[in-house]
Amino acid sequence: MSAIRLVNGVEGAALDPLDRGLQYGDGVFRTLRVENGQALWLDEQLAKLAADAARLGLEAPAATIWRADLARLASRLSGGVLKLLLTRGVGARGYRPAPATIPTRILTYDPSPPPSDNWPVAGLNLRVCDLRLAEQPRLAGVKHLNRLENVLARCEWDDPEIHEGLLRDAAGRVVSGVMSNLFLWRAGSLRTPRIDRCGVAGVTRARLMRLARAAGFSVEEADIGLEEVRAADEVMLCNSVLGLRRVARLEHRDWPDVVVFDNLRSLLHG
Image 1 (cartoon, rainbow, N blue to C red):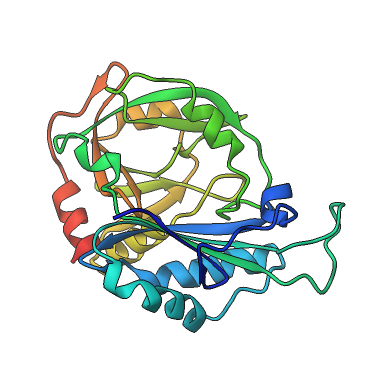
Image 2 (tube, rainbow, N blue to C red):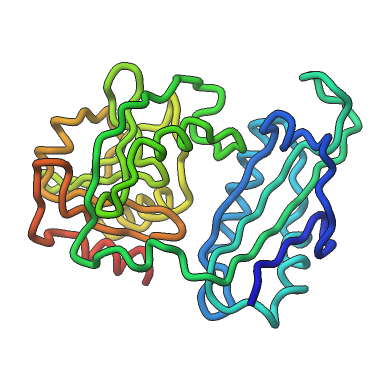
């Protein structure tokens, strides 16, 4: 099956070249895994999309509208990756948006298994990226359409044996992976970088923190440096396509043994 694309609910419709998502990256998006014809954690994804849109002053479509788009594709959904994008819509030239701009919603579905499905179950191999994330608290946590920092960071390596890179801010604090959020297990506590200056606060990150706390785990958001990552008892990455994956190596530091990963993964997917 080939990929499917809807623009404002119309399959095969073209995107206007003057759309502000294309012109300025003015919009937000979510990426979802599809299994057995179902988009995973859809309620949480739609809630986060709406919250991110509100941060940009965008009016998000009601969840029922996105669900109606998905219903049109129901008979063709199997596995793969779904992406929901919302832009501020078509506007005249200039950064200032017109008050009456109508948002554009875009849905894409790729039935191909994501490449990460072939990554080793025993654990991922990481590197530290040279690129530093710029701080912008106004946008921190938002999955907006301007992802140039991530693009440039991912261009730093082409070794297929390296699965992900760690991103730091200008002060050297670890923020996330290029396409994932980071968790550490150390001294009986689950720790994840604060996302209050830059970076994306993913749905899977929020879900894991909520479920781990409910199960009695100590969960902390904190400033984390590279030395703390290297000193961790276990390191894990997550996003909505990966789920939760453990890290086996970061450059010269190895984590050969599972500590708490299996328990946390069961919580996330339970």
